Length: 259
Image (cartoon, rainbow, N blue to C red; front, side, top):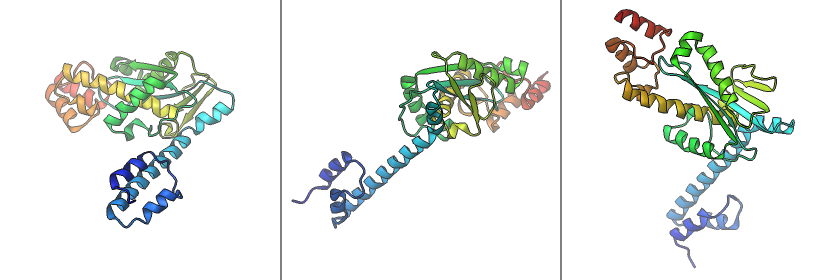
């Protein structure tokens, strides 16, 4: 009996990836063009799934290493908002369960807004603990962006419950504890840091979209406070608003012009 293409699609939807399965071999020999299109699409999807699993294993390499060393609550820490001309810097710390197995999580900058929100919800649901810190533009102006970032990261870790026994940090050495490791481009190499970057990014973006309603004319809802053409045009036309970082050069220059 010749199977219909709809039946083949239904069977493939439930079939685990096996390039050598007898059913797959039989489909490859089917001369119908529609069947060949279905099998190629299925194989591509399964291959992508396999690659995602391999990427997940790669992203868990640091967590796996320190779990083997005897640590059990490994936190990833990352920040968002060092470069913008307005708004806060936001840091997040995340402890994921040791068996966390969600594929596709990566540096928040490499994900679409839709994907970030999707993973944000999953991380919020599955994380052992999440800590967030928001350091305002005023703090940034008082202590400089580097120190404000360190304050945000430390406070995010303080807000974890339970507390971590090892910390993985994106790029910068924090000195929060002796049990920590700074990883260059850590948000692309550690699942915990990547999760923290997503939490921080979604949190900060939400704040900047709210700022757009309070302070229109700078396009905050789209540039998130970064110095885009529209943002700089807003500075030229309106001057600074209450959440601009007055110590940042373009803002300082605009402020001087309006004074």
